[in-house]
Structure formats: structure tokens, C-alpha cells
Image 1 (cartoon, rainbow, N blue to C red):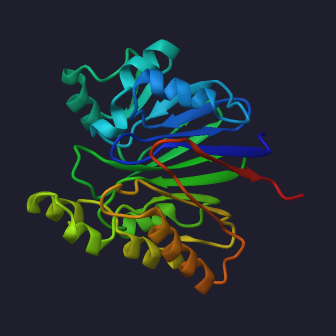
Image 2: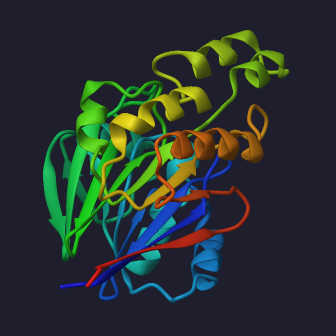
Length: 265
């Protein structure tokens, strides 16, 4: 059984999203939102070198999460795990690889020595999901795109060893940006994206005694500042007395990590 688990964000934001998790014997990827060439380049820069990839998990159909899925999975000859409705939407667009594994949101399945729990999230995509990935006694909660943390999301994401959670925008920066009003309303809606303040307000409900890592993902380059999101999250952790939690921000242009989960003897 693995005694450590590594987590990297190859990149996170509106230009592409991809996460790699490795337990030393195999790895899985969550989303493939960069070109195949770019993902292979970023993986080659990770240290320690992750074990061979066994599959790619797809959260939803938006381009910044599936752009390189077909070519990347076909080149590595690995399957993409995708919900049935998302697959039906992506297949006519030629974005799915030869090998696919289909699931229903809310179901669980195993890939090598990973156990994956899926749950629906509120986002304006065909069939968006979050994941809780378990291996070697560790659990990683992932929710990259969601308009709010509802009861179902809360139930699945709390009490994980590591939490990767969206902190997309600041309301004032969103209001003052040049985006069309309909886009602003979409982002701020209950099927849109999670803002910094809502992310912070959820932390006391999500983080348990076992939580050791918090990674903020999918920060907007136009409607957020990394320093602002980090400051708000760090102040929240301090108010909770959680100096034991390592806070990391996933960046868009370079890989972030690793976060290393390891057993305490």
C-alpha cells in the first residue's frame, strides 16, 4: 500500500486545467485542458517524476478542461473516465479518446489502486462533477468549477487530507472588469464560479483535523489577484488556528507542487 501521495497542478485557470496525482506505482490525471504537447512538457518538469498515468478523469465538458483529452489519452493509450452525458456531448466534437470509462455522477469506481467517488456540482456545463480520490488511506477532494458549495458538495469534500478548491474571483474586480454584463452574471450566478469570500466561508465546514493541504485553483487572471486570494485564505486559516495546513495556489502558466501526503509514524 502506498505510504505517500503526490499532487501537482500542471496549470489552472481559464486557459487550461490539469491535475496529476501519483502514489509511486501509478498516477491519474484530473482534466486535460492543455494541448497534448503542453501537458507532456509540463509533466516532464515535475519532480519527483510521477509514476505512469493510468487514466484521465474529466470534471466537465468546457474546453479549458478537455482541450487535449483525445490526443493525450490516445498517445498514452489510457482511458478517459467521463460521465455519460458529458461523453454524449463531447463525442460529436471529436474530443474523446478511443478508450473511455463511463460513470454516473454520484457513483464510485476504481482505477488501479485508486478509489474515486464522484458527485455533481452546480456549474453551467453539461454534467459537471467533483471528485474525491482515495489511495493508500489518503483522500483528496477536488472541485475546480462550481457556483456554490451546496449540501452535496459539502458532504463529499469535507474531511479530506487535501482539498483542491476553486477561488475564482473577487466581486469588486468582477464588477469593474470589461467583460460583458451577461458574462459577469454567469460567473457570479449559482451555476457559475466560486468567489474568494465564499471559498473562505466554507473552509470551517470543510477542513477537519486530518486536513493538511489546501490548494486554491481556477483563479481568474482578470477578476482576481493571487495575493488577494492567498491573503483571505491565510487569514481564515489563522482565525481557525490551523497553522498546520499548507496553503498553495495553483498558477496558470507553470506547474504547482508537489503537495506530499505521507503517513505519520
